[in-house]
Image (cartoon, rainbow, N blue to C red):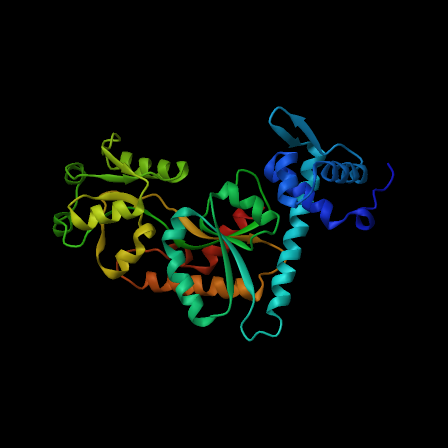
Length: 333
């Protein structure tokens, strides 16, 4: 097979074209995004397919979809474009006393839990560091990490279905807990499953994985699964808990601010909650940039501050360096 000479023939404009076609799924929309006329876009696509030596997109009723070769080119395009964006950010930071940037993918529970406090701490120590956040589910963020569009992922650590080559480092626990307002009658005497069953319950509508873990604890406690009140609003659940005797079952870190302030409390459970390690996911190579390392240091410090409080063991996953290293090796691809 003749060489394609990609290093000599590929142009950035063609890489941007591949990315735009996959993003928009339409020649018309991709052309509008790139500022290209339809004939110019078609010519560029033919040039890219000639370089690749294979068709990259196939037409269908609603637009275009990538072929197998197209997926390879799109992955290459996004990786290279992300590296260029990162290089531009690093060049902007040259000469700055405390510059640099970090792109962080964050799972929904972590975004309202440990992340705000970690960022407040980071801004104190690195006020000029630039941060870009991308919230999503693990399966949405891992491709961005592979393409180097983000530096790391923060949140619940799920074991990969197949080895993926990423490092997973547990830093804290995100146990599913029963939460109630400070001064709630449940907190005044030992809690039993019967006492929990008599309480008004409001549950969060969260991702499928977290929802399954909540349902698992509900089943362990022998509580009814048919709950009258569910909400996707974190603010609504918070106000309901603070203003009434309702209780909720969720990852306790979702309400970590109110737990730290003492407005909400963790209700002791009559059964142990299943473990839920959380932490960071990052590529094995290259090593974290100074900006990414500063972010992780702020996250560690915030988790340590939470662990020093008396409402839970959120840093249990980091209680032993040996245990952490064992877990990290077991989850490394």
